[in-house]
Length: 170
Image (cartoon, rainbow, N blue to C red; front, side):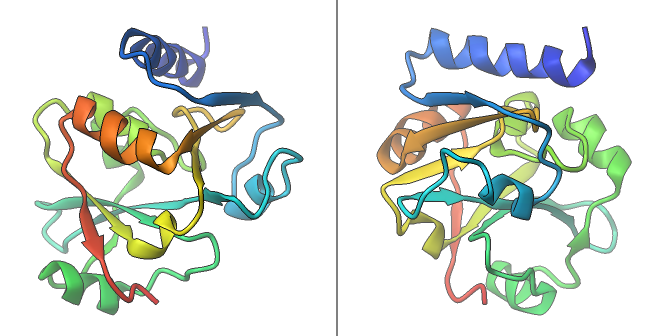
């Protein structure tokens, strides 16, 4: 079985075990946020997050940032908001080693594999402005859609994750 598919099955099983409510959509591979936004099931009530894996210059602190699809990543603004100097994109090997993810399939569900909680989840507050929120299940050939409350109040606590809001990420 392909590694992404294996990881996806682990996440799907975890969601079922925790009785999380979601909608599941299988689709052609979507490597970019632009491709994800073109999916037929996406509408104005769903935030499809742009997920950015970041680290400091020493590669000793890691962050997974959830942004609205139209928000460009601005290192200086996010760095200042988090009190971390010089954030940049984390190296590809850290993405696969720490989250079992590949570029194009970055998702907060990769935090399932961060058993030591080395990665801080942070988010642009605007991602909560819609009724629903959507993420890949660590495989960019599928998308899961959750109500905002299901994701923030059930999924993240079950993962042991306490996200940090970032105001004015633009």
